[in-house]
Length: 203
Image 1 (cartoon, rainbow, N blue to C red):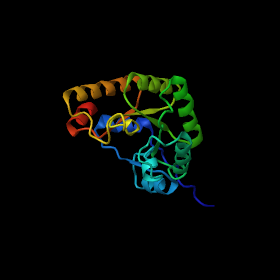
Image 2: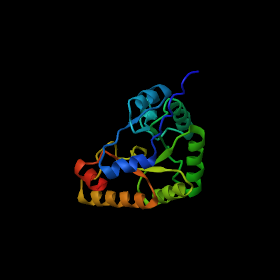
Image 3: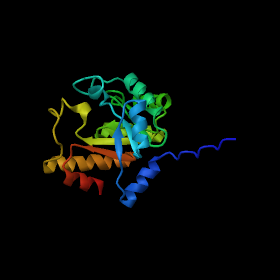
Image 4: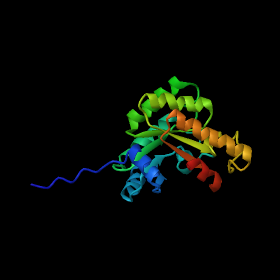
């Protein structure tokens, strides 16, 4: 009789939050398929993000705006087949949560059901986005926020540029972070943010 392999303990959002409280650094990488998901998982990362950057990296798009919900579900499900331990987070693409709470709930629910992800990520820190985050969280879906440079808003931001350099921008970003925290986001991605401001927000 062969011995049963020990069950693999999956990383949860509580594990990430405990590391944050303890001051332990987290490792999170992006992957878009089963092979790279498995390599990252076996490498011991805490979380794997199936980013809508798949549009740039895999499909050759010039921005993430063209990525569809079906594409994210396809890549999310593929990556799930390679990830057995790390927390799997799937990006919600452009215009899948922007027009109201109902749209956000239906689309994030579909991602969770069809990919096996443990969380979703929504870009932006406006009141409208925070409302969508709160609605999703109320349904029992863990939501990660994303502020700073938000690729889905690349045209409104005037291209790929660092965010939060001025005092006014920094204050606005801190307000956005607090708004998302209040809405129930379990974590925040800070993209293209000056390190000093990122440290303030993290604190």
